[in-house]
Amino acid sequence: MPNITPNVAWLLLAVAGLLEVVWSISMKASEGFTRHLYTAITLVTAWLSFWLLGIAMRQLPVGTAYAVWTGIGAVGAATLGIIVFGEPLTVARVACISLIVAGILGLKVLGGGSAA
Image (cartoon, rainbow, N blue to C red):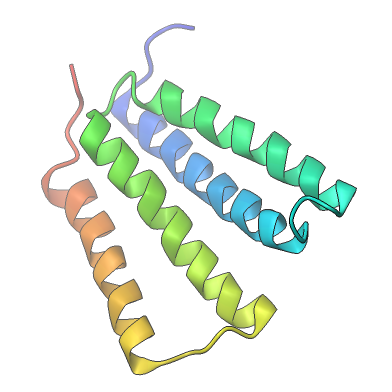
């Protein structure tokens, strides 16, 4: 695969992060990998997420890419956990999620240069 631009790398990283949300939620829905459809969704989306993360890392620094990827996954999973699974919504939880979002934005705006 040819080199990618930083903008494409960021787009791929965002998609990889969203796929991380999908696989984490489907893993919970799989009930310990006992529900086969959700298990399959988990495995496929996890593989795609890792693959896209690896491609994005061709252009982005590893620390930035990994932090943003896990941040998107953490924020998305926590938010959907509240919405879909009825997990508690507390002021402390919202504050911590907000800090993660601030960190992701900070890495993109202040320190998200290319690795090359």
